[in-house]
Amino acid sequence: MESTLIAEFDTRRAAELAVEHVVQECGVPRTDEFVQPTGADNTAGNRPAGADAKAVPEPERSGKLKGPIEVSVDFHGDDPRRVANALKFAGAKAVRTK
Figure 1 (cartoon, rainbow, N blue to C red):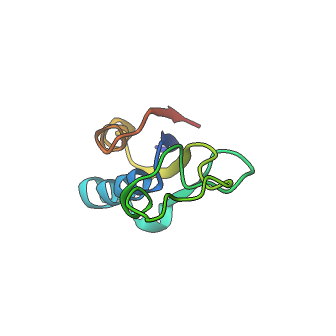
Figure 2 (cartoon, one colour):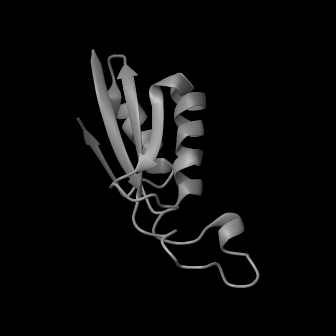
């Protein structure tokens, strides 16, 4: 069965970690996973994380933090719940099927 799962994350770092969880735990190829903003604006997420949080001076808020990051996974298998659980474990705020 083929399906696409879409998850939303507050930070780019969390989204990238989720991709690695899905690759390593579920065996989904990296080429079947996509990271992008949820809207038309470019974004680094809703809040600073990692290097963004430790920047000196304070990171500029000029358009970098405009919304959540979306991870979509094209899943070819018979249990999309396993992929959804890996995304949730990595910090997804919401997971839906497209």
